[in-house]
Length: 181
Picture: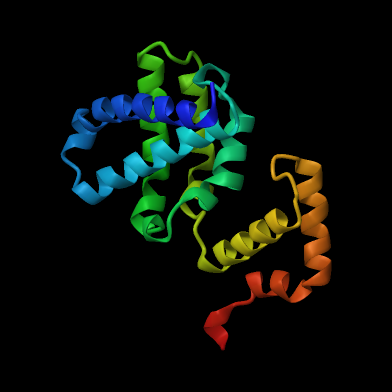
């Protein structure tokens, strides 16, 4: 199956899941913006996992969650989706997805994935930092221009080390406290 057809089929599957998740009692009474955040989180996660990394739900594990949420998730989001409310919603949305998939019999390790989210909830909620986002987008763009395969961890690590050696001020600026200027 080609990527475009796969993406369309995954999109239809996600839409079905979201229709059911959005109608659950603990979601339905939330405001539209919070439900949109849940939908954006679940849609992005599933697309990265299935289409981007070629991992079906029954193959999802800690390593995949780590890869998706801490390496790729930020890059997929549009600027207007990056809100404090959305980031605060990440743990809830992921847990809803995993519990739903477990209940449907699509995955067997739903509770284990929920436990991973619980352990990593603080990091997931603090993912967005405008300085880090700008840095990683620039790094990612330079990788693409240089022909780096971003799914090759060793190549990415080597490129990133070299990038920071050539541009040490960028790494320093990430941790500089702007509030004291």
